[in-house]
Image (cartoon, rainbow, N blue to C red; front, side, top):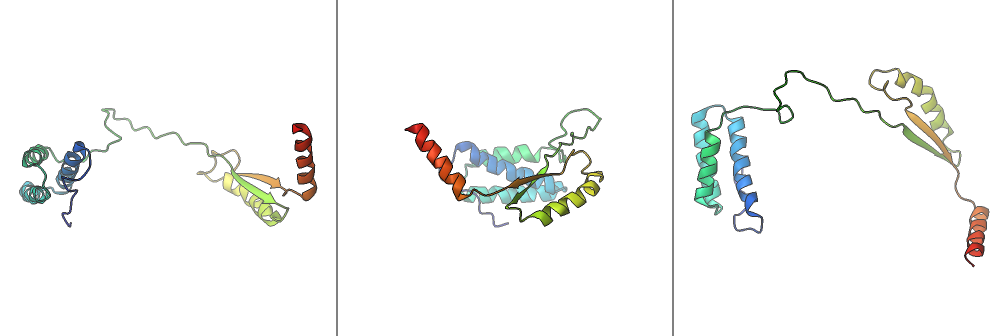
Length: 157
């Protein structure tokens, strides 16, 4: 740890500085399980922030607050008191669109068609009704471009 923190005189909102101190103190609280070692590391951290021109009162208040906290590793997503764990619903994935242009991707279309039944029978992909959506597209030809341009010119004129 290089102990190079955001300088207090920099152009940031005031809450950012206290958040930096708090997050670093909580990080130490979470990592260190021995209270004597924690107090030693918090004092080192306090000195590092004071050397970066942080206000002594703010740093001392945050260090005291964090050192009095219990070392509890909480899951941020599991703050409710319920004992039942409900897995999130499995989203239905849209099919993968396979675009074939100019008819040159016939081998790709054959491969996806051959493997799709085996893939849809697997447990992880069985929720999807269709894995591949094959789309055939042809490029524009000169005749269609000229006819469309002529039609647009006639309709606007």
